[in-house]
Length: 147
Image (spheres, rainbow, N blue to C red):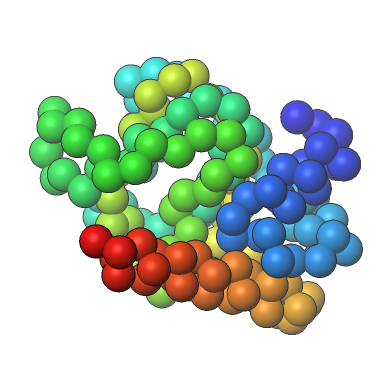
């Protein structure tokens, strides 16, 4: 996916960037790196350094909290337009889960250092991201309350 317009559309549909302005998404789109992953691979393992986040262009990624790599019990399965690995972009802690490739996948990766540089140069970007994270947390709270 080399078209800038397509990347901006994908970012706008990704939960973490849904409240970010289109103009700010344009600068984010320039920093994305394409990665291909194949079924059976792991994108990252639990306790790895959190050095980048991912947006799924196509395919399916399973997220597991298991420390045993042979035990593939997923807490969530993610598909196109969803993101993962974003928590470590802000809290500097290691990965809290393992990400397994369930179907051949195309990912767009954003390095932590690039995201942080963008936030410094485009402060409104951080407000959009915080708004998106806040919305996701509110939704999670509502789901917990219903259970």
